[in-house]
Length: 244
Image 1: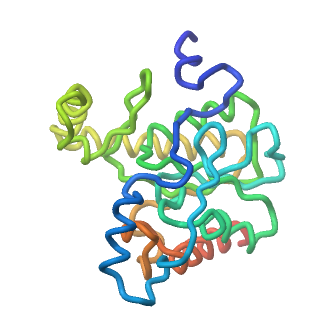
Image 2: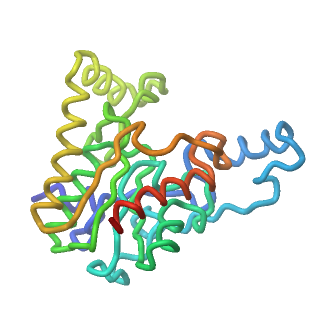
Image 3: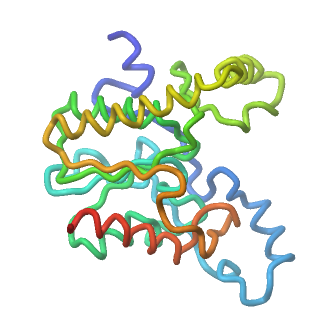
């Protein structure tokens, strides 16, 4: 399979590779933070709170793969909502769930991630005979898709307004979503497919789609993603399913 070295930076890597900034991610930029220091109230939670991302070598907020006891861990997959953009590593959904459940919880959230990226990573994990205790999935926006190449790119509505040097990807995505319900059906198949792939390998798996988890009650440092209280509420829902 000649494309694996490109996608994984070497065959030894079980998941898609992403290059991350150690301190900032997505909308959670230094510029946006400094701007909000001027705009937010004096008691704004992130005025003095540090956000540490702790990315591993593959660009996930997880330990290095070779150090993980996968069989005795729980995996949580998703997009930036799971990765915890704007949250300190210790405040993410996975850290909250780990504190509640008493098992290691591995954060496989991909900022801007798509259903196809999660499905692909599921197949790669299973190909590597990685079978955790259970898998929780927060479904990304269903019309997103991953363009696999060098580098691979997760495409969403933000690609409809990008610099000309990226127009190929914008055009690809525009055509992908142009005819209903093409994008939605692909997204649905990917999420159902990954859920069934785990279950077929005797790993309990549940996918939470949009609106199936509690509404946001607060926001992270980027003022866009779930805050600490919301992360705890979502972890509570996962805990209920895991312990039912």
